[in-house]
Length: 98
Ligand SMILES: [Zn+2]
Image (cartoon, rainbow, N blue to C red; front, side):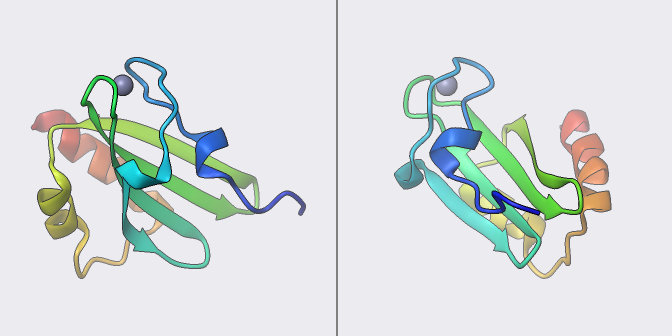
């Protein structure tokens, strides 16, 4: 267990145009000891992405999903729900249907 801390700038790039994100473009939707969920809007191509960063036994795992949801809609999606990493795939399935 080392290098537990992630740097947003190092770990997340736009999946569409590969531009580096910076913190000013990211909104934290959910954050706890083991997981951070961010909504990020790419400053270059404008693509919105949900980023799931899980800090678990396997180390830091991040998954980025392009989304049509804006920041407000994303907040509603996650508000009040306790998101486990297992639920991420469920969310992914939902997003695919949108
Ligand atoms: Zn981009």
